Length: 180
Image 1 (cartoon, rainbow, N blue to C red):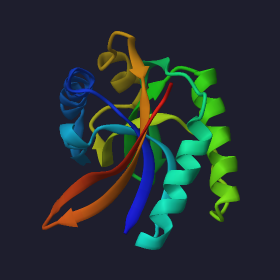
Image 2: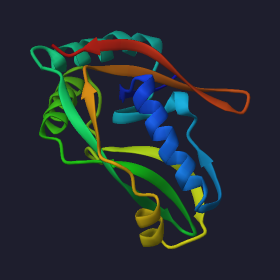
Image 3: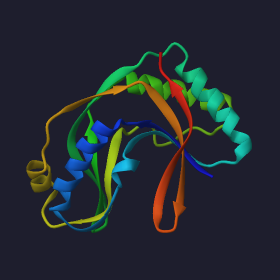
């Protein structure tokens, strides 16, 4: 199974981010937009894992979050990861020290449980669209699709399974670790 650890959002935040996606759609010729119910922030991609590794992942999450308090992070701005003539379009997260600390603790706990180190590090963003072909320049899209800063409460992290059902991508929560 394909797994990742994420910050999931409540429906209010998902609707707000869905509204941002709708703005972006006006600037895109083509692309694959994230379904509103799948909107999340990936903290750590795990990749393929078998059911025997689930317990180790839960232990690592529990260890990393022990005595770690919930925190706030802020959504702010549109960004792009160019991929040739296509892009990944994302909503950015303002620098968030608690998120960085949580990631570092999680990374150490995962390594103690036998999972390899994440070489990319943390790049906090919320993917809005993949393989997007823009009608306008990056700067124009950033300016015209601007949105109000949104503060988000982070009270847990979730081990998610990603799978395809037909042509639809489904994210299934496998374990939720509350923050104190």
